[in-house]
Length: 463
Image 1 (cartoon, helix red, strand yellow):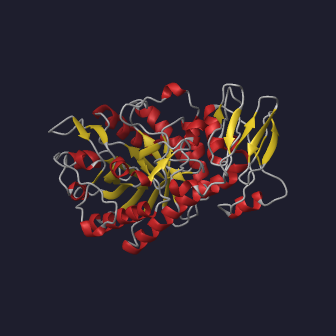
Image 2: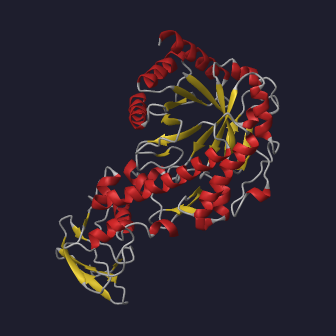
Image 3: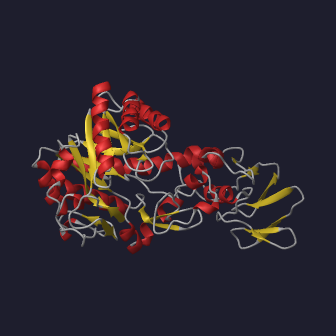
């Protein structure tokens, strides 16, 4: 069993007691942030401060301008420019291995400076913290990030977080979204990207189906993917591609405009017809459907409750949209693995992963596994039974030589209780975890670190 404690460079730099404290925790390695997003962090042990404000994402190694392209990370002002190197050397001096914890597409500073490269939902709303890996500039930035970390940082391991698109869920500024009562399915739908590169990849009605699901309306898409404009006499107008409009009344049937100017009928019983397309479809799967003998139906969302899953919301669009989404993550991951293997062939690669194909965020979707990764780490911040099921699924996707890791939360709402934590560790180990990734050794109070140390000892004694 390998234990890895997560840590920020500022937890070590300026605190001579930090390395020994971490070594006594009972871990073999530290995941040290080499690139990280903005945060406000408690520093309960540091001799110089108790709270550190990190106002923007930063790179904690020297920035060589010639090594970057359009996207260049920022240097920190709250730590030395080489904080990763200073912390690495101090940790290795007490016998700890140091893995480079690398946050990839989560970068609000770069997103704000380059709005054309960020994730946009079906309504066109931008997520500035989320760089979309459908853009070559974003992939190249991530490649440069990995290359520089391996070249300059010389870590004992590489940990890839946010190795795919971020989504709606994000604790930022003062979050004020809970009152909308969006369901988990809604937030998954709001996580699907419609930036200029992504939008053209989806089958044509996808955007409107998502918007209808979020707004609890029945999908009646127009050719441009927008909603028909309401009229006060009970009819709606939907524009055709030639500039004319067709009316749809509330007498039990509606008319949907087609891109060639014709119309299709659909009863208001929860089934809608997909508009015919006159142009070339965006993918082979879309082409097969649009050239078939019958039009594909799009789902209707019950106005009161909405869909319970993304698949339900998308209906027969789901398979193609899912394939498009996972392909983006797969492309990014494989290119980063290729760069890593060329730069440092013997450095093991860990990926924060989720077997759910609709996942977004720090734990990117990995529904089919990846034999070129050394460790697959699953999030374990929720109900232990749910977390264990996720680890089991990752184990089913792993090859015989791969390890599964559990990303274990030692912070609230978890109790500072060694017995409870030890029981959770045993649950995760039974589900297949061969590594415990412990979050977070710098943010945890002295009481929590003591509980975590005791929990690790209890686990070793009772397993």
